[in-house]
Length: 167
Image (cartoon, helix red, strand yellow):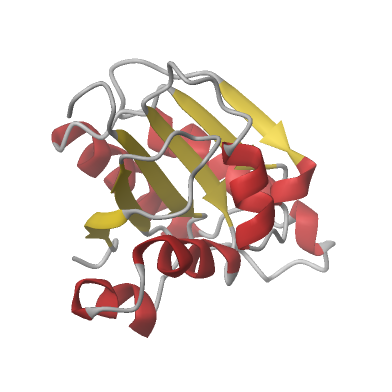
């Protein structure tokens, strides 16, 4: 990856627990989510997808997901927890990404459906290469996008990889 290329890693939180009568924002990871999140971290590390910065929803399940994902990374990037990413759609994700410093070349966004799949498809399009994303962006999944755009002008990208825990 050269200095003008940027990589955006879009992560959906791992499987959350619906068993308690908690407000949505406070739902923790379910046992399956606790198992799956480290798989995503290992996949990121093995493939060299190491974010330099992370923007994460403030929901408990997204925070717990990132915590478990990051345990598999050789270096822990700075994380900013952003209330605007809780329930965010593509515009909120783009607004957050557009604030990222120009020297960051790999950014991770941790959020929720349907925003993560909508953002991925808005940036990468609806071609054959995105058919798995179109079918379903499951919990604990991540899309890796590459773009020549700066963060400020982020508007188009190519899907480079898509991870699903069951794969």
